[in-house]
Image (cartoon, rainbow, N blue to C red; front, side):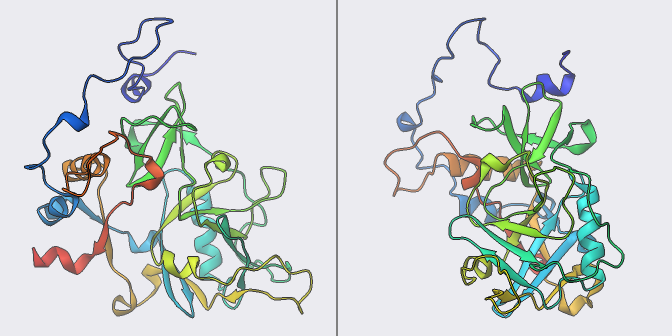
Length: 310
C-alpha cells in the first residue's frame, strides 16, 4: 500500500534506520543535562498565551449530573461524528435522566444507561454503525508526539484528546486512556445504541474495538467514587447510583454552564508542557526517563474566566 504524505509526517521513529538494522538508543542523555534553568510545568502554564488555549464548544460538551457533582465530557466530532450525534439526541430527549451507572468495576469502567432495556428510544438510532477509527485526512489535525507506544504505530492528539495512527499513517482513532467516553456493544460491531462507559484506568486493548468519541475533562473524581456494582438482572437488584440528568452544555443558560478551555495540542505551549512532563525539571527528580506514556499525560484544562486574569 502506498504511503501518503501524512504517513511520512507521522511515522517519526522509522526515520534513520536502515533495513534490518536495530534502532539505536538516542544519543541524548536526559540525566546529563542541567535542568536548573528550564521552566517547570506550572511555569509554562502560567506564562502561556490566551491563544494557546481553546474553549470547549458548548454544542459538543456533555454534562452528566450526579448527586456528587457534574462530570464534563468533551465530545469528538472529528473521529466519531455519528456517535456524537447519537448521544446528543439521547441527552436531548431525556433518555438517561433517572437511569444509573449499573456496572462499575474497580480498575475497569463505569457503565451507565438502561440496564434492563426498558426505556423507549424516541429520536435517536436503535443501533449504530461502528466508528472504531477514521481515515486520517489533513483536516483532522493530528498532533504527533515522539514517544513509542505498544498499541499504535504513532500516538498524539486530535483537538487535545489522545489518539493513535496506524503504521501506514492512514487511519486514526481515539485511545482508551483514563476518562475515555465510548459506547458499549454486543459481539457484532454495529450494535452500539445507548449504553455508554467511561474508563476508570487505561484499557488500551479495547482500542479500535469500540467507538471512543469523547473524554472526561472535569469531574473524573465523581466517577471514580461511584459505588461498585454488577449489572442487575431484575428491577429489585442494586441499580447503582442515579444519573440525575445528562445535558448538552449549549442547552443550559450561560450561568449554569461549566465554561472551560483546554490547552491546544497544536500550540507551542502544549509542546513545551508535554516536554516538561517527559523530563521533569524540578529539583525533586534525580533520574529522568526521557519518555512519556501518553495515557499518563493529563491535558491541562482551566476555567475560561482565568484567561481574563492574565
